[in-house]
Length: 330
Ligand code: ASP
Image 1 (tube, protein in one colour):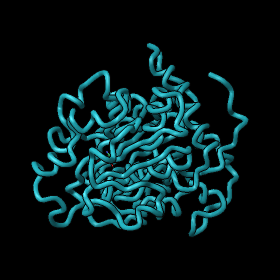
Image 2 (cartoon, rainbow, N blue to C red):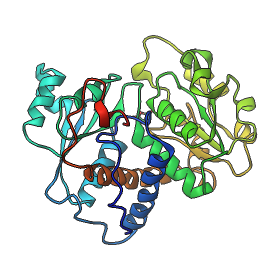
Image 3 (spheres, rainbow, N blue to C red):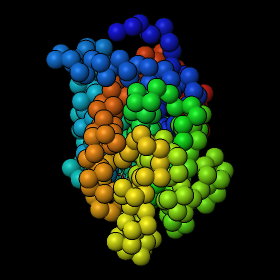
Image 4 (tube, helix red, strand yellow):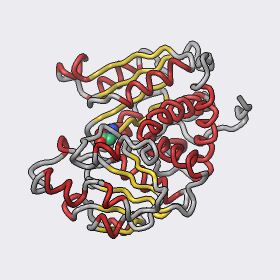
């Protein structure tokens, strides 16, 4: 593995893609490439996080992200502890701040947090002495998902700059969409948002995307088709008439995909609702779908993030209310 330890990452936490620069992102992706190679060997372990403690604190369900962070930490030699909201004092009414103070007293080195409320992870980071990684906060950000998506695309197509990426479906509730839109813009890709008006946030044009309400039009000549799950758990009331009708207009099937470039890749962050946002056969099409590859890239990206954050100088000043001098880049 090449020595990039001379690089001092400009961030103490990874709270979002917002604030990262193209060189920051490239540095993470380059290191992730090395971890992809390592993860394909029989011996996947390194000891660079030996003696360190990583706590995964999940207030929302997760399969991929939690397992992936756990594997990533263990492969780098850290002691990893998993805490879920259902099996902790949070269930007994403890506040987020008290939970943070309790965990802080145990001197973890990294805290990986998923929370249903946007901004909760940033709040928590202000109470912790260790690095905090956002594993998804409400409909706000999911930075490691955007990074793993970028790694998947870059390894397949060689670059991100100049590509056209269509993000389709429930953009309104999707932290994956927000983080991806920011990352793709930073890296010089063109982003299209394709969704019914009810599933789009206001002022999308300010986010640097072209908006479409029609899949056939929006998918024309795109390089990447990124599908999103209907996030029913974040919906109050009905945003689509029925899942059947949604699939008819916005579900990815062969006919709609034929409008994209012939070699266009299909992505989905998971979990997938087959037959709702994506045709089951397309999801499994080994020539077009890179959904399983995204999962593999997730472990490598999280190893790279854990590695880079562990290199931060230990004498960084505490972060202030707005994220402070070093927190601002997260
Ligand atoms: N797994 C992703 C997330 O946590 C996407 C999803 O749940 O639909 O945001």
